[in-house]
Length: 257
Image (cartoon, rainbow, N blue to C red; front, side, top):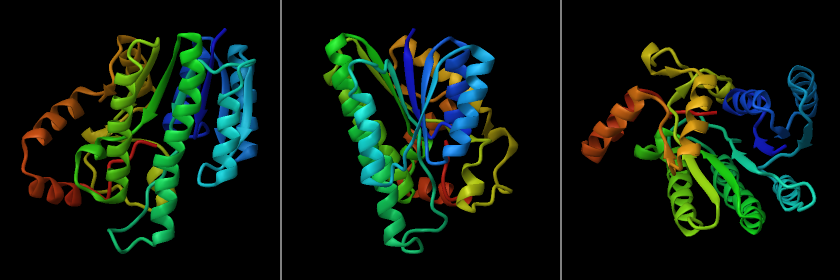
């Protein structure tokens, strides 16, 4: 039986990945900050699907948290076959309205943690000749919109480059780029969502099903919805100045978690 490790597993897209993978019979390593919620999630998934659900309480904005997950991913006796780097957050406010400490924390979680955990996982996977990594980015990666979008653009570029370098290793890497998803993400960030049209909202469970299908197809970037695929096709052709204005009118960010 294979094992998947999911960061940010207790809510939103991470929880949807946990539900889907458990239903498919995968054992899980659930990673988040809230120990109580992790325990409740592990018990529920074990009781419902009969899988083993290990919990690892870790804050990926800290050195200790990243190191703890790195060590678990490097464990050759209990290998991880699929890594889902989902942990992330948004900051309310425009550039220079957000504190430098919060901006640097975002870089720690969205970039440093993704780099280090992907590297720890793929090194072990490459030695076994199989494995997969899903790095959750956002369609914000394709829009000029602050540190959040820039960090997610890094996730996309890094994942595509790593996938190319590991193309013959048996290890698959994919950047997942959703749009607005109905999760706790915006509430935790204190962001209003009243100005977001209903058609732009995605269901986390459907999104995850499409993402896993894209990973199986060998895609390195997944935009898991026809509406957002069409929207991003338009974005590629639009002037950068217009994109900045569009992203301002539709909200602070496009948030996956």
